[in-house]
Length: 211
Image 1 (cartoon, rainbow, N blue to C red):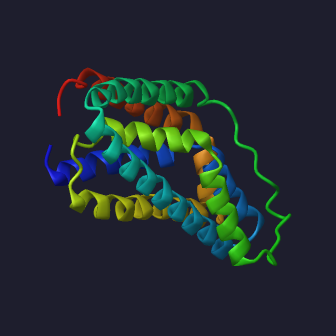
Image 2: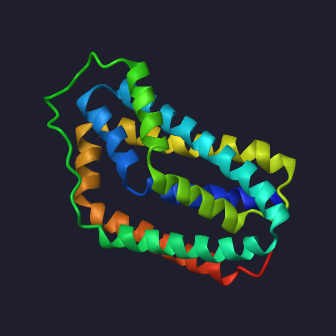
């Protein structure tokens, strides 16, 4: 797998994970709804910074580990693919579960941007599932020997995906119409995302013996 395809594969998997509603999604959406759009965007930047930290940790740790224990590469691909499929199943299963947000009239315009940024970063880093997803994706898709260009490029790509997606969430949920539209079609959106993640996990596990 060449560098461009590796970046595309990792980016696509990270994007699917980011776009799947969870604690981070609800936190940014709540911030945008209960405070201001700027606060929601600050929280999105915090999510992006958390993504950089997860990506850097996964890259540095995996590079050293896989170089010393080659067989672990295959094992992590199988486990990583299985976990992604499981996560997709959980997303599919919870597609009809409602998301609860505060009333639009209960806003706090005095919430500082720094506080929103720290809340976003803290939410990202405190979610153990996010760390597992990153480790699974990186272990499943990266080559056994990670070139320097990927070590530099992937954290930047991850930041753009995480901050970009949650920035979109902040903008949308600070407006009433798009927010109501998502909530109306939530089950269809979640099932589509879950189905894609299940297929991705199966594909990654099935190709465990390849570099």
